[in-house]
Amino acid sequence: MSVLIVGSTALDSIKTPKGENPRLLGGSASHAAVAASFFAPVKLVGIVGKDFPKRYVDLYRKHKIDLSGLQVVEGKTFHWSGEYEVNMNNRRTLATDLGVFETFSPKLPALYQKSDYVLLANIAPSLQSHVLDQMRRPKFVVADTMDLWLNIALPDLLKLLKRVDGFVLNDSEARQLTKEDNVVAALKKIHKLGPKYVIVKKGEHGAILSSSAGLFLSPAFPLAHVVDPTGAGDSFVGGMMGYLSTAKGSIDSNIRRAMVCGSVAASFCCEGFGLKFTTRITRKAIDERVKHLEKLARF
Ligand code: AMP
Image 1 (cartoon, rainbow, N blue to C red):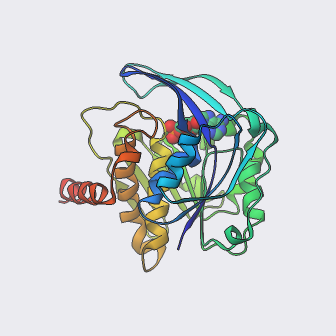
Image 2 (spheres, protein in one colour):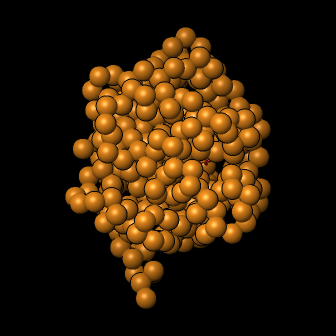
C-alpha cells in the first residue's frame, strides 16, 4: 500500500518569534509526504523549478518518497513567505510567488494511477480535480484546502467536494465555508456538500471528525515550545493518510487512531523550522508520542 500525494512543493521563508529562516523546504505536499512516509511508501506529485536545491531532493529521497511524479522545469520554484505573531496562532502571508505553479498541469505516471489512497493536499481545487480525473478507482480520497480557494475558487472547490470521501479544513475555513460559528452545525453543512468524513482542525486544541459513525475528538499533543507551526495541518493529514493506507480493516475502524498519528506528526513539525525537526525523527518516536497521547486522553 502507498499514498499518492499532490500539493505544493515550495521554498518557504518563515519568520516566527523564535527566528527567521529563508528558503526552507516547504509546501503542503512536502510536509504531508514526509509525515506520511513514517507509515507508508509515498508517491509525490508536484512541480519545482531548476532552482530547487539538490539537498531538498536528497531529503525527499531519504524518506523514500517516489519522485517520478515531480516535474522539474525551467523557471522558479513556488516561493511562499509568512510571519507569525507572538502567540504563533496568527499568521500573515508576506508574499506568494507562484513561479512554475502558474503553468502546472499534474500528469500522473501510469504506476501512480492505481493508487488506493489519495491525498489532495492544499493546492488550487482545479488541479486537485485534474489529479482525480487521472486516477483509476481509488479507495479513499481526502482533500485539504485553504482560505484562498474559498475566496477565489469556491465553485471549483464545491465541484471537487462532490468527488472526495474526506475533507479536512481548519475551524476558520469551516466558518467561512458554512457561515456557521458552531463547529457541529458547520460539520453537518459540510456533509451536505459531499464528503462522508469531515475533519475540522483546531490547531493546538486538536481536531474533530464527523462521519456516519459519529463524532470523534482527537487531541493535539501538548507542546511547551513551538518553534514554527508552518505545515502542521499538512503533517496532520499526511500522517493520518499514511497510517490509514497500511492499517488493516475498514476506514471507520482505523480513522481515529490515524488522526492521533496525524496529531503526533504535526507536533514534531511544530518543533523546528520548516521540516527541520520532522526529517530527524523516527517511527519509534512517533509511536511513543501516540502512546503518551493515549494515556493523556483516556478517562
Ligand atoms: P499550513 O501551515 O498547514 O497552512 O501549510 C503551510 C504550507 O502551505 C507552506 O509550506 C506553504 O508553502 C504552503 N502554501 C502557502 N500558500 C499556498 C498556496 N496558495 N497554495 C499552495 N500551498 C501554499
